[in-house]
Image (tube, rainbow, N blue to C red; front, side, top):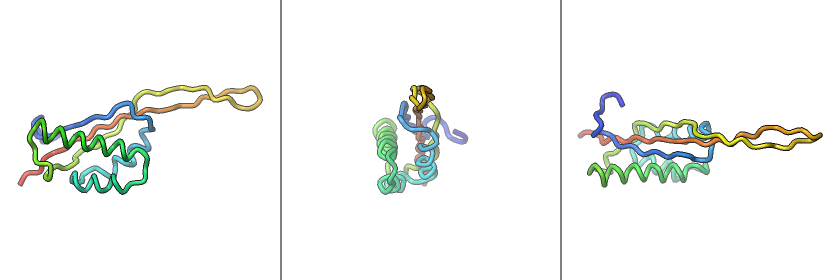
Length: 119
């Protein structure tokens, strides 16, 4: 985090989320740069399945900021919402004419970083 010391920001991580990182990044893209109150509103109105898990992650980051660091919840902003790949399950997909294919079931991870805005 450029320009911030370790006491200025709070993070929360979500690992082993059973969705591809490309789909998760569509949700993360909507959160970057928003205030926490606005981000929760966006996640509540979103129709994607993963938005519920991302909302839990955001609430966890807010709870970390409030309880561990004594930050003001109303002044928190999402400065980073990064998505990465995690494990990959390889499964056998039976096809016609005695053939087989590969099916990839991807897992992802997400990291949300919050910063308290200065007055």
